[in-house]
Amino acid sequence: MELSGYPLWMYSISVRDLKVEKLNDHFGQYEILLTCQCGHTRRCYPKSFAAFAGWDCDLAAVIKRLRCSKCGARKCTARTYALLPPRGYKSH
Image (cartoon, rainbow, N blue to C red; front, side, top):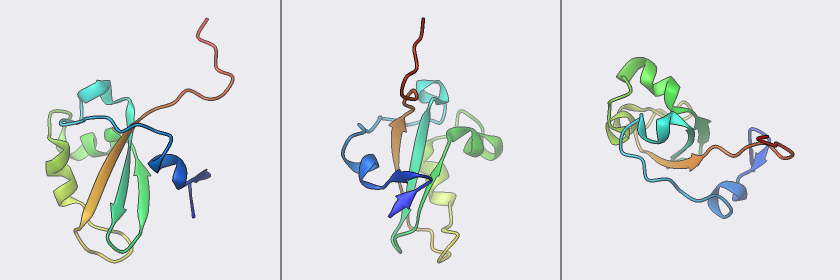
């Protein structure tokens, strides 16, 4: 199974989870991988949640409000990952 061009195993093995409590932690520079009990996954960014909840809102409170677009259940779990620079990127 692939997610937006990236294999799903990449998110579970090679990338370390971040500890995020509020949406503005780590200056909003991370991705959120949402997984429903039905197996549906979606990748999103904190700025999409901050548009309706505000940057000072807890991530756990936002996750409770989410509904799966495939089955309609409110049983989502979230994992947060740091954004990785593209291959070949040089900062100088």
